[in-house]
Image 1 (tube, helix red, strand yellow):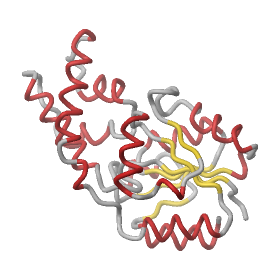
Image 2 (cartoon, helix red, strand yellow; image 1 turned 90 degrees about the vertical axis):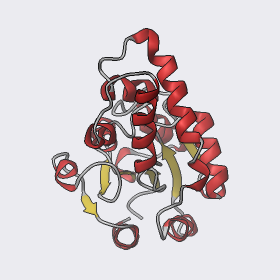
Image 3 (cartoon, one colour; image 1 turned 60 degrees about the vertical axis):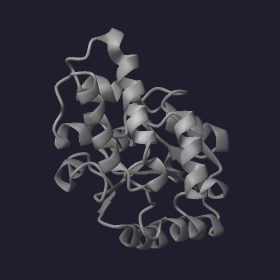
Image 4 (cartoon, rainbow, N blue to C red; image 1 turned 45 degrees about the horizontal axis):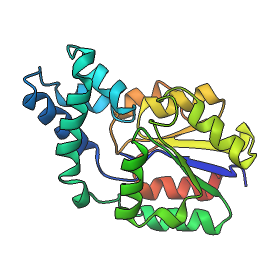
Length: 216
């Protein structure tokens, strides 16, 4: 076993939620009379902590309106999050990894409350042994989430891999000194992910599962 600890991003990596996040950001901007970011700009901030995401997606937003923006975003996202689906093959892949003895964890830009809700909706809670969220750690790409998870389980950098769909995930992996594994079916495009030198760049969950069977 090369990777004892396998850490997954959530949105756009396990859950097909990138489109819903983009629409919620754009709807929140409309509610508040703010310039609406295009899809590419809104997708780029997926994976960041919510305040950091709003700061980048809507640079015109004054600090005193962050809370209002967050509340409108949550209103729109939570109104439909129960309808979001896992990518095909995710439960079987995670169950196999756990059976094979890997420690599975989540490192996400979601809040703790948001991740708990998502774990319950998805039914994946029993498969993960730990998680870190953006409201209890520094936001990606700061390495704190991965550093804390490695310390929690006593796993070395060389035995840890971070799997995600954004450059924020790959930069966090690099900052933590661990391998980053990219998936292209989420928020950030293939060429942008390749710029951050992942150990592999995979195009669907089946390909990801096969790579992990062979190399993890």
